Length: 344
Image 1 (cartoon, one colour):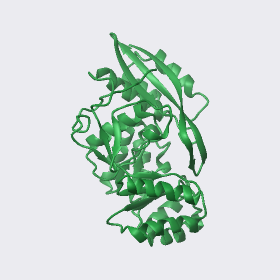
Image 2 (image 1 turned 180 degrees about the horizontal axis):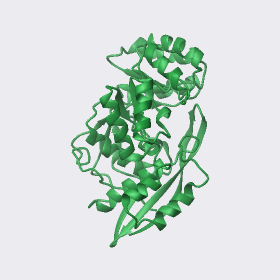
Image 3 (image 1 turned 60 degrees about the horizontal axis):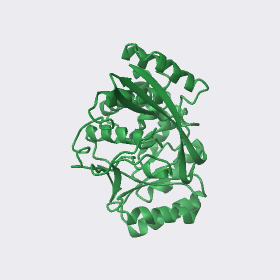
Image 4 (image 1 turned 120 degrees about the vertical axis):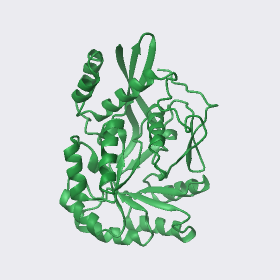
């Protein structure tokens, strides 16, 4: 088996605001495996500023992987323990290599265009009019779950946006999720959660910064609305540490981004532990190209979780790859009449 990798820069159609600043581009890497004239493709979706593998030796580790691809799989994955996005790229590439179809990793009703995945519509941070326009577009496009990133503008303005949605749509008609990306201070978080709870919010992601374990545990105990851990899960690798974190914080939900938590295997470890502790979960992509999104979507479908998932990022980039994934009426579909144009 031979392996190589290639860096690729994804360009946003419009600058996308997060609590970490405004994103114009997104760096990613494609891993290619060749065995007996057969090709396998995987995406190592490094997320600068968020991934625990955003390290100076990232490309060095990809070089190491390509030079050692002949080694035992367990040995490779152990060596890549601190590089979850490379683990994920390798998982994809190995599945792709085995498949009769380069991009059909998990054959199912979803890949046969016979079923779809319920997803949330994502509202990016920005000024009030920009956010209002996005909300209106998502409602018009048929989404029944809207996830709004908060923390970029004045909190009162964000509350008024939520109020304007609730004025027209009840919680039975539109499910509202918010993502604070760790933007609240621990001493003000509970008060803000109480105010958000007035709008029958489904859940809030990561209200305070990760790493404040006792503060987050206290918040999850007292919160008037469900809390979902997101960034909190990044960089936690041993199963015993994962279990300890969930037992101490005891959140209502966890959110799993395969590129950030060690691919399918790392995510499934979290799911198994969460279910034992009766903690809910859903899957979210992390600004991968359509190659990574396709892999996450196919795998997510096999998990059988009917909650709205966070998988609608494929249309954000000007230079993404054409693929069968398409969003219709708040659902992610796999349209077999559409072809891939992966030309790297």
